[in-house]
Image (cartoon, rainbow, N blue to C red):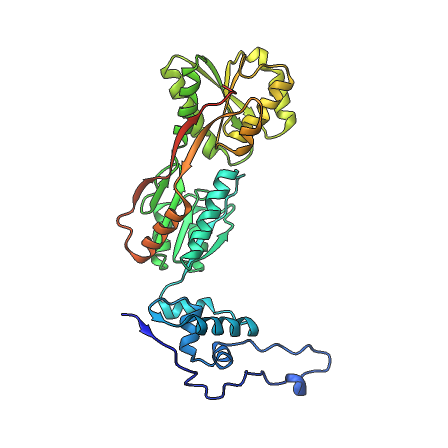
Length: 364
């Protein structure tokens, strides 16, 4: 049952704004005086409410009914004083934190995934979680888990840059982490695993190219460090689909530079390819421009397919055929985090995170 609370500052009858004592009398002449750190009691005095009301308002407590004018008065007092709630103290009172730790990616992340993780962070913020991005470069799984656990997050959402092993999960659980969620190309035991079907992206691209009569298909493999997590499975998916139809796949290493694309385009006649899956739209557009500059007719001589369905691909001529990747909305993942923290998410296990489908356009 919710409560209604509008009481005045019951422990602070003096409602005059709190003023810190002047430290000038006992400070050294050449030393800048330290600013007094404002407290919740200061906010309560300035707003004319109790410290409990300040806590309820600034911690977004929904079980207690407080009028909007009172809430705004408390917020204004906090702004005026520069008061910020102490996260560690709030954690002690609540018994758990509202912090979600998101290990940062060590690899180039395209617009599709950037938009997805941005939506996730906004959705978590609306659920009153604080998202902290943590750099874990070079850490082994258990070492990373210990580093994450030091912050005592309520949840860890790992994007696969550091492998989440059963040992790492155990470290996190013992430290009080309530939810461990992984986003990657395979399951992680003991976690809610959201699996990106990367082979499916390559399979969809190759099936489309085979269906249009192409039989010798190049597949771009980016040379940028870390992208093998995505490009390897996409290459495997394309190869299996092509070979099942009697077609051939040729891996094409490519750096994301005009020079690398130009060098590859110059070799095109000797490669004898009639199609190329460009890994994603950005690499596909880079290579398609180089092929056109080298006099290769797209799609007459070579069909080109990307992935991610970026707007820029629709502005090119010919318009870029692409594999549209439908990720679950960030809000759904945020809801899973919240359910896992609250113990209502059910058993850990595998959940699909994306679906892939071809968007045919003029480049193929």
